[in-house]
Length: 499
Image (cartoon, rainbow, N blue to C red):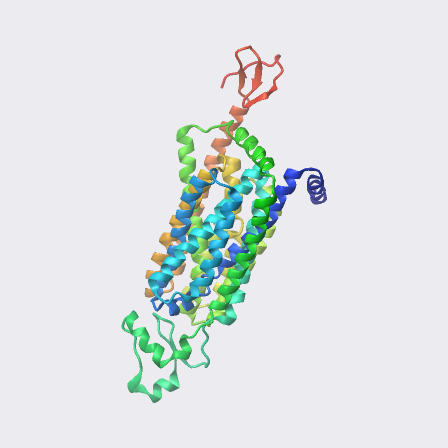
């Protein structure tokens, strides 16, 4: 089966110029998604260092993720308007050039307002590249998109796995084992120094008092986090080159013809308006809850480990990398096993496993066992891995065509969930880090219930489509045709049945 598929791809590459162009777009999109995963995966492990740079509290720093989500939301609206009006390669070039500049600038934003604004730009540009590349491949590949989209997001997880490892050596580290940690700013003091200078111990009353700490413990507040961000900027610049070459050298008429054919075929079967609205609401809610879960877990896992168990930030960063490594492994395995199952049931089962993962994390946290972080990172990463790529395929195969507008809806609803979660988590984790477990467990249960509803809707839409496929139409001249296929005549001896 696998060898036949590889041989088929080889034959297409050899004989079909349009397919060669599509395959080239796919290969370089994989690299672009690896860089995208790297850029977004850098945020969680470096959050506490960015907090130091921006001179703010954890609650304020958590809003950087809200800023990214806000940017993603705006980008989804822009894509819905511009995707069919401007060149697709220019879209990707614009996004990646912008990311190059933004990633280089982030570590130098010493004012909180500026740091927040540049994270909005980061979210907009990452979302822009993400949405355009995904929608372009779905348009080019049509019903064959499932496996390709999974491979695309597999490379995204590879980038997300590697960036925390690259960042770990450059994070703010404190020497010595006897330490006291300030809850709001993660500023650590040597106990012996405090005991010898009791009358001069600095205290933090507000964010303005952080300047006092800079004078008393300057070594604790130094960070070299700009280095991994410069690496990220260089990779983003590198991803611009192949799309610039494709823009100037590719024959775009070949792929435009294929897109028009796909659009005609996809318009054959329209769902009833009430069913269509119900499907869109369910899809939007699933996207919102899932992306909130995935983004919050990856972004706040390191912070949770540092706050709850006083882990070193480098070790907490390795837990994030374990999550991404498990995510990558799950993505790779999902490429081969997902086609064997009904997508609705497959995603529902995986959402149930996510519920079990967060249950493990909550129970181990309540009993003070920090090994639950490693177990949860591995389990959660594996079962979260297939959702986003299969989410597009699930919508395309079971409900309706994933057009630029549907992609915009999915990204818009996903961004709304990511906007809300960091605000809630940042506020509650200041009170107690255990709220991290409570919030994510509750949201995972909601996700499971939504996919149960989606499974029921899928059965209904499939029944409707089967009826539509067997409808027979007669034109003005008495010619009999199959529904939605004017080019293929149906044997006139068939009995005409109305549904």
